[in-house]
Image (tube, rainbow, N blue to C red; front, side):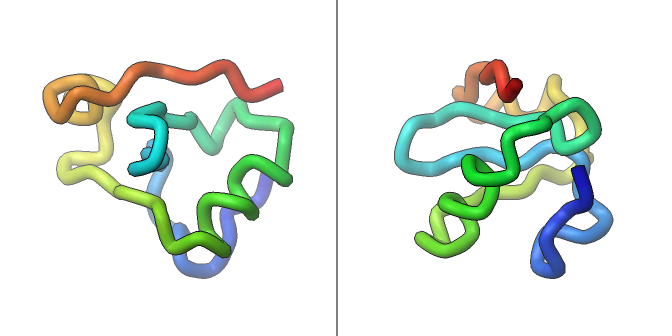
Length: 64
C-alpha cells in the first residue's frame, strides 16, 4: 500500500491506542492505516525498525 502523506518515509507505524505496529510494506488493509491517521494516534520509530517498535512495547499486527 502507498503510505499516507504524514507517514511518508516510514515503514513501521504504531497505533498508540492498541500498542500494535503495522508494516506499511506488507499491509493491504488501507482502512486500518487511514483510521490511525485520522485519529492522530500513530507513532513512528527511530530507527524505523521492528526491533525499535518492540522495544517500546508494540506487538506486530497482521494487516491483510
